[in-house]
Image (cartoon, rainbow, N blue to C red; front, side, top):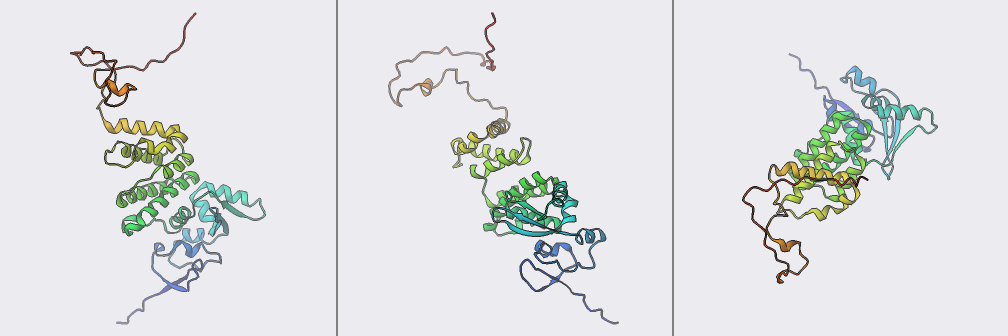
Length: 291
């Protein structure tokens, strides 16, 4: 029986200035930068589907990302296929001379993850990374979620937030106020990412072993009323039916006095102890005096 020689397929990674590299039989084996090159991309392998070949055979568009203006040269049809954001951008560029897209406010690392998903259809699994890489990758996935919220790719948003949660858990780290504030600045009130980070902050505040307390989130409280509301709601949801002690009932009255600790209190007054359970206090709004 004749032995059929193994078929080797190669590609050129122009973006990394590498030579011919062996290609597997799966698009996921190709790095995103293979197609996102400054020079014309290499010929497409024969095993790509007809639909994907058509998306990777159209015109290229220059994109500049971040304050460093990181340059990408990407397939215009592929971008437009996945999101109306790039459809509009490409349409606007046809009316301009330079024909490039500037995304100078976006994070370059998050954008690179976007390109990886566009060309490979997947994200790397943070569980496969060494411990010292998990947090950085998780943080990039958080920024990818914000980016996808802006350009409207809900499927990738879900993948990104899953990797973010897993990365935080496996790294043993959580976002601080410096990471949370930009999230609230860039997202809408119903954002799942807001819900996640506000619950993280609430847990840190309530955890007696945590180094963070409410004061450590002052930056977020001062800049966003939504953050304050979300954290209080998360604390109320997480604490269950347990109710704080009534501060108007008999107890340590001196904690509301201005005398120093250990000093004799001159305003002691005996409270009558109630035999029945305290009645709930209702919030009452002052409306005004009718004449």
